[in-house]
Length: 197
View 1: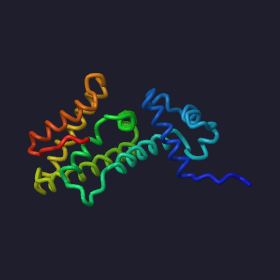
View 2 (view 1 turned 180 degrees about the horizontal axis):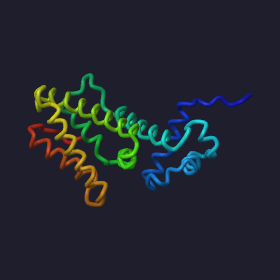
View 3 (view 1 turned 135 degrees about the vertical axis):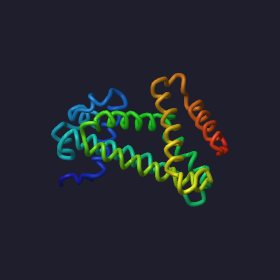
View 4 (view 1 turned 30 degrees about the vertical axis):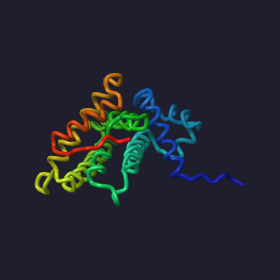
């Protein structure tokens, strides 16, 4: 009896293999052959799940985003200040998973200049995150409806700036420093945060 394969699960496994390769060796390393090898498959088997590298990269980016969103704390019963802090900290490369997400994001940004579909996926991802952060900023009293988009853009710019510094100089930006700088910047905007355990 032939083995039944869960196609979506296999696609997710392959996207994760591509993400690991990108994080370890850059986007050039994420060839169909190398991704298949990383996942323990043949290139022919990989093409059953992805038509080409473009589809694989788009899926890898979307899967990485979905993973980040799934790690947001549940809104019910969580104070908006804690949700905002967790969401902004979630954008920092403070562990291997978030580092990998950043490597995938940067790699896909480099490809998006000549790829409208990837550029659109990134634009939609930013709009969703900015809307989410704007809603939390309003709930925390950091923004009114009229300026929520601007406040969200500022908060995201702070988190992204810290993240980029950490990516370029990881030894100088350990997780503790990333969080401390983020907390300090949020305090200047009037949001008092409690250090997470």
